[in-house]
Image 1: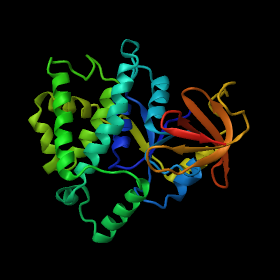
Image 2: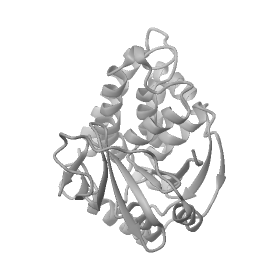
Image 3: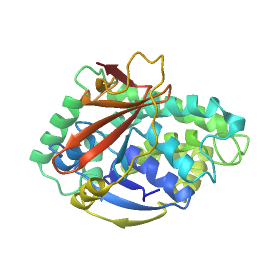
Length: 306
């Protein structure tokens, strides 16, 4: 398999989730830094419209959403499995809570006026206005909790995690980290980027000790390449990951399909259907610079329309 190429930026929580997984699995990978705000022309060349960060590239295969990316990484590097058989189902349910309920409480709560000097040092008012506009466009119908409500919710979640860890276990579901740990730690990592907000974690000793164990994994070993270099790698690819279209999936191989996130950033990606299972949908598309690429999405959290 070609090298794993992570398209990310430093302050992205879901990117930190992937970086820590790379560290825990001691993976060597390639890093492409993408813009945090639109426009993202090089991202669009590879994904066909998917704008969320991060995404993972392997040659001409583009993997969107960390739920799918983590499955791929576990196949590539099965040591320290993210989905251990003994925790089948439980780890993924806890991870889904962390990627949604915890994330959409902790992250908006962290981005409040007291955090701006810490999280966006040196930026001007124009950038903050552009940032607010960009994120509002991603979540046009989302009702966010007030700062007061979010404070209560964050503390409740931290208390629940502390209770889970109170028996001295090293990680959320036992003696080794799993997908639940990495999905959870990303939101706490984001909170800790703002010291006034991140200090909340200090009141929960078991959570703090767990957090320190998690971030100690680091990010593995990586080299930096440009987005133009990543596009060239896609254009030069001569094969793709094997795919199949299930017979009872409602679509046939070769159908033109639109794939759209259902939670936020509702940007559709259109392409020719080449893969469809209960876990994954894959569309093939052609870009003037990237050539023929195949874009992969998980089934949960995405809508398929012909």
